[in-house]
Image 1: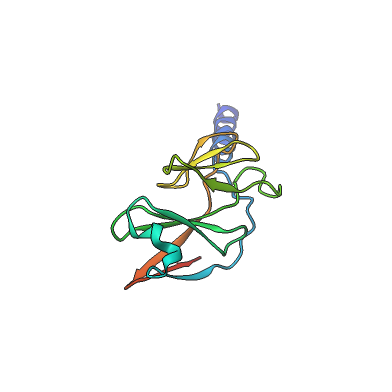
Image 2: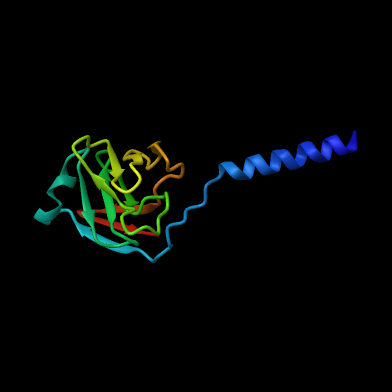
Length: 138
């Protein structure tokens, strides 16, 4: 009976750990400030708007989810992130981004994968809105 209990515990531990996907995207320091009055960021002045900004490992996608809620995601795809083509791009669907390298798709509302082979979310950065400045950091 003790053997079965230990075996069950090991199986549970093994399968529980395999579900948690660690990001293979290199962790780089991020400290970006965006002036929302800058015409280059006009798309962020409406809910649902998004833009690319420099920063992170291969760039950042900023998405305005609500009146005062912004999300910032690393552009590097979470699947085989070391491939030079492994980065996500905005397209006409507005609610998701896709990787041309592996064809994975991710939701902009939370960075979660909606089509594989990627099974880990995009890396998300912290955001803070102060007056008309959006700060992106980790």
